[in-house]
Image 1 (spheres, helix red, strand yellow):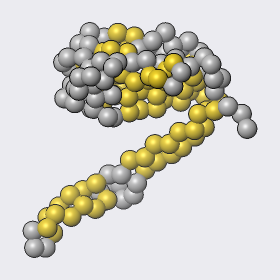
Image 2 (tube, helix red, strand yellow):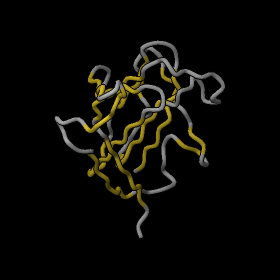
Image 3 (spheres, rainbow, N blue to C red):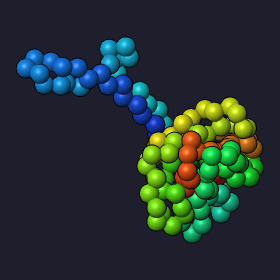
Image 4 (spheres, helix red, strand yellow):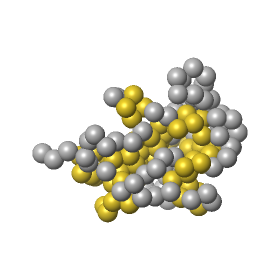
Length: 147
């Protein structure tokens, strides 16, 4: 088998309502009627990974000023996660700041809370200008980019 990154995403729309005897009940939202998801596999060249070193994440420290995540050159896969911490050593928790992820300085496409993550597969190698910033404070951003 070729070297690769396997990935999956899922989302379940939930509607909470009060039902008989005052007990709250969660059901799949009728608007959608089912869970959503998908998965894939992206070829990868290991040894050229950005964001990790010997199994340890090299966090980008995001602040309230937009800054490039890294120099992402000819990548085919990108994973981004709000770590829930302010620093690389994970010494100080930050579970309240939101992390905005954008293409360039202004085209925000995701806002992540503590523990949230996204994956971006690219069928064709690309060099995106992915930028991150917080609404307040600092957030250690975990990321992995492969070529």
